[in-house]
Length: 107
Length: 124
Image 1 (cartoon, each protein chain N blue to C red):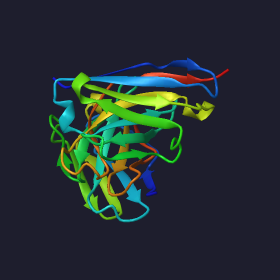
Image 2 (image 1 turned 30 degrees about the horizontal axis):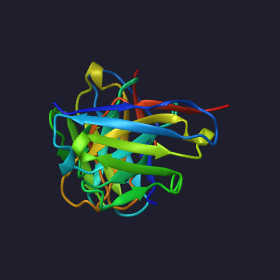
Image 3 (image 1 turned 120 degrees about the vertical axis):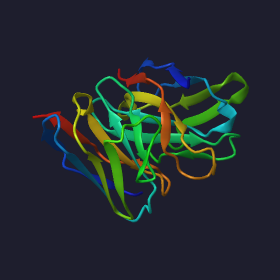
Image 4 (image 1 turned 90 degrees about the vertical axis):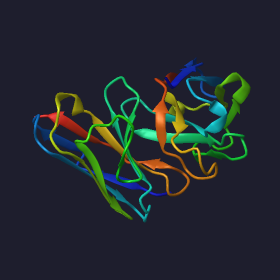
């Protein structure tokens, strides 16, 4: 199975700052990578699919880049509601796998 | 509005069985592959199982293969997960999730809509 490694584990930032989250795949997943946001007590929410496409209703401050094995989720200017855990997920091969998550916390 | 509502979770002894259900509304279930994804307490997300729109393709994670069975009833707008031989490590919140793309029933999914989950606790 394809292992996804997210870094850093925790990102401590202030509102208005830029957040840069990384996801590295153990082998190429082409651009078949998604990003999700999860807040406490809530289901995950799809942010980005196929590496760079924003899902319906997702604000433009969220952007995704990358291909093959290296991917980045960028939040251009953190809003208070953006403090959460972020997961990457690949759909290149079965089984579909998730990264372990990056927590974006208030500094 | 797309809604997915899971039910059927609870406390069960190791070795026991449980059947989860997911009621779908706001879209045509028969057009989409559907999935179960779980999250152990305080842990990350783990894909569990997928079934294509007409049940032609079914996939399981190695961790549940041979113990869990996914099924669907499009006429009842429902998805199911039969869980047998349950273990402590199956303890998790189980989410029902829709595959984003309607194309390629045999391709691995990403997930555009999720339910709120149903909690399964395996303990004596």
